[in-house]
Structure formats: structure tokens, C-alpha cells
Image (cartoon, rainbow, N blue to C red; front, side, top):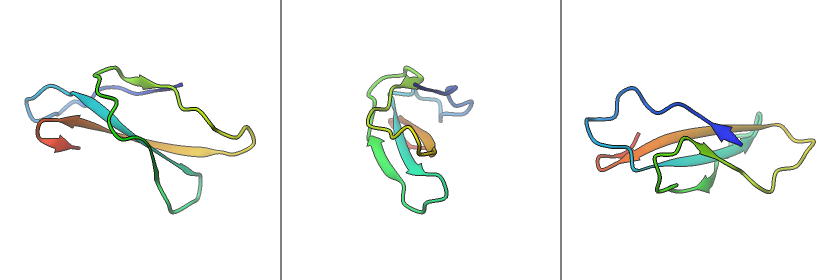
Length: 68
């Protein structure tokens, strides 16, 4: 399960969701795991991972101003 902290700066509007992306460590291509969680919850369970592979993840907050 991935967990993260909400952003400190968010443009004055409520966070409505998060975009989660992954890549194999050292790779160039980021793949979208979930485009919008549609929730302010700061955790997500990623499925389909391979036990012997190391992954990087990045998370971006979404609000009415867009993705940041």
C-alpha cells in the first residue's frame, strides 16, 4: 500500500483526488496506475506488481485548478 502526505500548498481549493503513476526503477516510462482516485484519502493499494521488481511511484494532487 502506498501512503503519502497531502500537499502543503494546494491553491486554496480542496484536494478532490490524486493521480498515481509507476515505473520500473531506472526506467524512463511512467505508467498511470489511477488517473484520479476521486478521494482525498492519502493511500492507495497497487495490484499486479512483480515481487522481484523494484518500482518508483509518483503522486500528484488534483483539485479544481488541475493536477499539481
